[in-house]
Image (cartoon, rainbow, N blue to C red; front, side, top):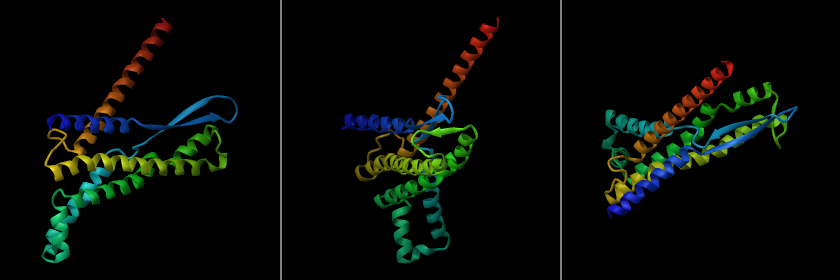
Length: 212
């Protein structure tokens, strides 16, 4: 049994890290000439905020029901029973909030209108897309990625919590799905910053050597 738990741990870990590193590259070209520019759009543009927002909404709803003493009624009692602790309904509602929040937050995070304005200012076009429809293209692309990214986050959140609730096992060895996503996000971001810093330092040293 411990072997399968460990196997599940690495499977979900791989799933989380792989999803965090997925991008869709939009290839742009200068309107005149063959200069190419890659505009990456992250699959999970919203990051960890949908999960945090979902937890906040559910916890806030439970707190409000307790404050106004709505739990004495049948509806309020049902909500408190299923949302004040981990349950299948709690997982389902939280996953739905994550999916919706990812879709809404992705646009705020990526800002397709500003991206298109920058591309137009530099006279870049996307192959196969009319110049006048660049903004529509980026909005449609982001919408598709937001749905896929939302499903990715919801699954990464739901599976560990479902296993814990129904089988009494925490496959993340004291870590929940939310903690693993946050940990992977921070680790990947730190790795990218360190790699970028090393690359910039190498380029700077190369420049100094050439000047000497």
